[in-house]
Amino acid sequence: MEVTLNRPKLSELLNIKCIEHKINETKNHYGRFKIGPLNIGQGITVGNSLRRTLLSDITGIAITNAKIAVDKNPANSEGLTPTNNSTTISDTNFHEFSSISGVRESVLEILLNLKNIVLSDDNADFKDIQRGFINVKGPYRVTANDLVLPDTINVVDSNQYIATIISEQTFSMEVSIKQGRGITEISTQVDLQQTDEADLLTIDATYIPVKKVNYIVEEEAIGNDNSSLKEIVILEVWTNGSIEPQAAVSSAIETLADLYRSLQSAIII
Image: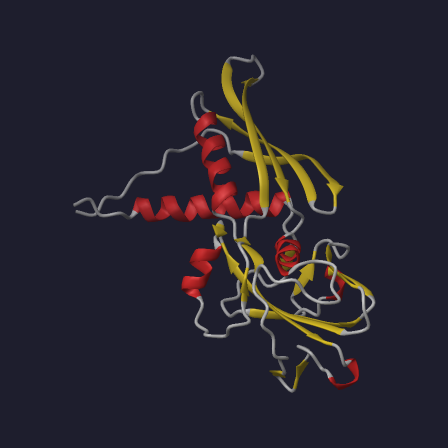
């Protein structure tokens, strides 16, 4: 049996107002929102559902894999720089616990630094794996600013440190960038990989763009005679800079609306 629910008519339209927005750091954007008026008892439902959705269902992008190549004869090396839509990859035997001659950091430290790079995407939805490349000659301090990325992908903090090359050699890297939700651990990433390349290094992918969410519910008198008591939700959102708090809240509302629209047309068995 298909069930159709009648929507209740609200005497007053709900408003969502951004009452504060600030950027504390490059990777720390803050927004505070006022949502209401709501009937008594609805505030905690709205606040909690938005909080859970913001923390778990907002799409993000992250670096998931990397390949590293070092050539001590820079004049003869093109490293991992793409040429004619193809990539020439130097022979490497690096694994997560390798040290790299001429590089201050170990492979594990480099992977952790790559994990901390926050990326934003102008194209809200891409399904194919995107690629980024680094090709530098030492001595050199490598940062996220050295990543050559597709036009639609940007680095939030270009000063994010990656590694230091301490000798005269070419350091090259190719990274894979995916879109997703939540956190994908290394073990899961390996299961999802469709490659047998021995030099592919896997990274824990953290796609979550929202770092923290708080909310409180307040009561507010509505009307000229203050006879009607309503609830107001004050929502606080912190993001990593890859998405503005306003866009994150808008995306969460859209996700919840889609969910309840599907419930509205659900079939009870």
